[in-house]
Image (cartoon, rainbow, N blue to C red; front, side, top):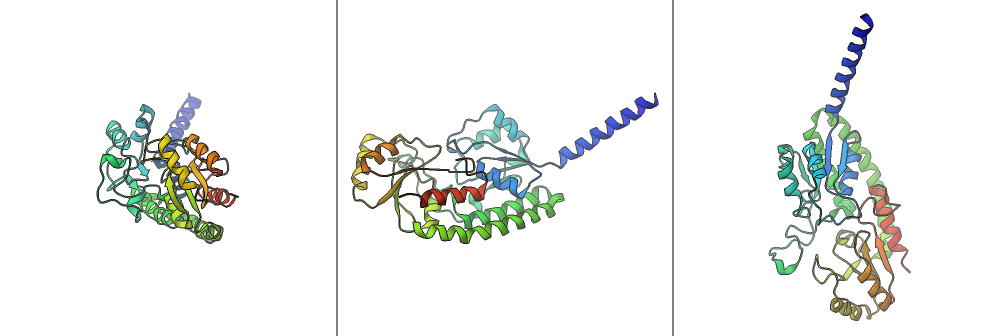
Length: 301
């Protein structure tokens, strides 16, 4: 009987300990892998879930039951914003019925709200294709803007989970130190790229090109969100024959067929770049993502 009492006490204690630990863990739902990586870096003890991978188009995601269940458990949702997720995030919020993550006043965080986005539009209509009035949402490929986002996300983590504020402060300090040390190295690598011209599938790398000084002279898409057509590719071939284009670029999740067609006829290399963490074997975190992007771009002959 005494043994059973001790066993019961031990089981009860373990249960209470487990409950306390579970409550202490922050659940973070990230819309894209780059923000999952950033959240995990700033909150190493958090449970971080990414709704998409680097091999998916973040514009087009199915509001699956598994995503709804993950959002229902979330204390914090971290997304690119600027309407990148407009086609699926509102549905997840509605279906999950988690009031904590319905407003940026609580547990919802948009990276685009923290910086000055590129290419804002004062007028948008359907004839323009899949464009974003609030600006280009692919801002994670500008290292300076990303540092600003990291600072804002750390503040949001503290707001949502004030008991662990000191941990978030320390993690941000560690990240900022490592990130700031890498920026001059990346700037040195980017020197050779300034002034180069490329044709790319979409405006996915707009911030990277802006930061490095690369000029995207044409898109493989006839309009944002539309697949390349024969007539459009023919017009791009005429453009490429000027002889000043370095490469045709696609993200690792985008269809390569149009790029290969153009590359073969214009005698241009086709470069597949990782759009996010996990977009190739080398991109295992945010720093290695930048390392890989610049290495690949500098490797074009």
